[in-house]
Length: 88
Image 1 (spheres, rainbow, N blue to C red):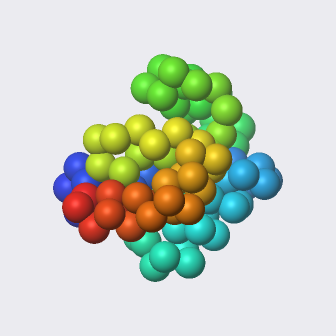
Image 2: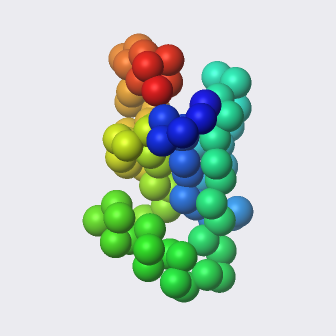
């Protein structure tokens, strides 16, 4: 995926929801940008500013803020995630 339609995940290395989100994306063979906020206060603040949330992961598909792992999993379970990915 290229341009502004790529998938971006802000997360940490040890967060179980971040790990689950990465596994879900990888199981769908999705290329994504993994932005680690581990120990980077400024980057985490940036994530909080652009998402309006302080928890990780925070995931975007193109310009659409999906939310966290729970929202990503819900999209997958109702069949909407693959549509978003294919249109992105």
